[in-house]
Image (cartoon, rainbow, N blue to C red; front, side):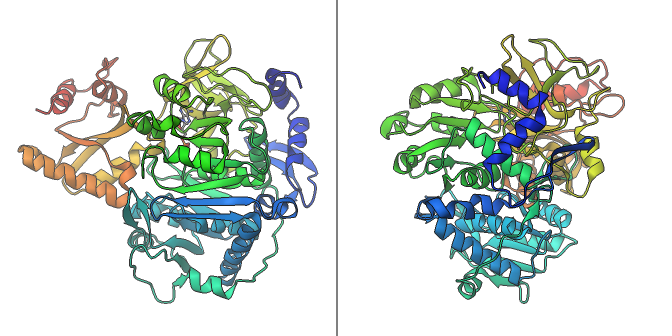
Length: 631
Ligand code: AMP
């Protein structure tokens, strides 16, 4: 294969041949009989009839050649722990966890919900589920009781695995009270809750429901749990992601396609090799954590660093210290983490030897050019932007330096990755737009291996959400605006829907609105995303009170604002907390009652509010301006 362009072309023109080759990167217990089944568009099945297992590929497969090599490196700067598990040790811990789960009655197809901080047991639990064919659903530790309840209700888990608490910036964050409240709010109740007691904070146990990990582990020290071989299209996990409705969607993934996609991406995009170390600063609650803390690196036989801590504690050199210490070759982080470091002494960037690093990959939110330049020059290592989504599981746009060393371009995540037939489509006509013209980033189906199979329990929603928004075409919409330059490099210009991205965390404004509306003083509220220097975007709320006089006094306003923020903290988690709640007596709406979100956002960002011909009452915008001016 001579050029990346050829490589990409073949992946689209000869999908079956291309992916059959990539499938050789993983172990198949039984070979597949059909590479691609696209008989029910837009649903796709990859590697039909093949039987494999994610845990086997991530752990067992490496025991013959690198049992004593590092597999999982746990580092917590919160609790000052540092433990390396070799593949052999990881295998033993996964077997024990799998045995505990089996003893709790968990089997193939059952759901297990994980609400855990970044601790090794989280990796054991994910891999144990994969081993026995249970479907895991990890809920980000930063989410609170309402977010948990809606996920518990949708996933209907037999077992929940949780811990007493996490720690952030040296402060203990109790998990158990939030979990208990989440279970209380949910109509579905799990049979058992497996509690990992880190000794961080005291918690109440529910008789008959809560069981103790340490005790059960002792019982299963020598357990051997056979691998459950799964047909390639069985479900490996669901991961909830925010959309434009208040109800999060369970992104559902398969087994074989996901394993192949990850193995191929480590080879072609991340250029990682067995025996090396991968370091992703993400969290297991996000898709990056699934793909590039746990499964991707391990499937490739790499050691993976699982880091509990922030980029600035004990000091802003911690990430680079870990790179030096563990000779990290591939690193993955988010632009916000780099913007946080940008506020610190740049000397930290050169304090440690980071020459092992082949590249630093950044994703999750737009990587602005100044930040990209700063880190690239400061570190002296290549920076690779990559654009993708929870739904796709691996990069849509990037550069594939394992295939060809195409140059990167600041401000652009790159070009379509192999397997993705990316088009920029006109919002109204569905026609392809030309170079340098703005369009919706769309992918022509079938989606490549590794992408979502459907929305958990809701095939209709899968089709109506993702494949029905482009006029006249069945195309997968990313709901991002994009533009392509004359050389084929793409640039992402923001979301087409009401999803916002705060420090790489994707949040639905509807969910935040619903939470604020639950405060009894609120009549109506609109939440929008506003540009922020550090976090990319922050949520800002405009609330209409039932009794406007309650916000007359600045002290009352502050009190109410604080209460509303606390409501969001309690229900959704601090990640979703708006940076400000402004009070107005009416929201800017069209005559048909739609909130003029883009105008609101423009005013907040000091831009021109655009076309206001449809506005019902122009004085609403004056109120917004007055509120922003703090009057
Ligand atoms: P999530 O599913 O939480 O990973 O969020 C996916 C969304 O984050 C995308 O649809 C984009 O809006 C944004 N995003 C992710 N990576 C990038 C990137 N490299 N550049 C620009 N936006 C990105």
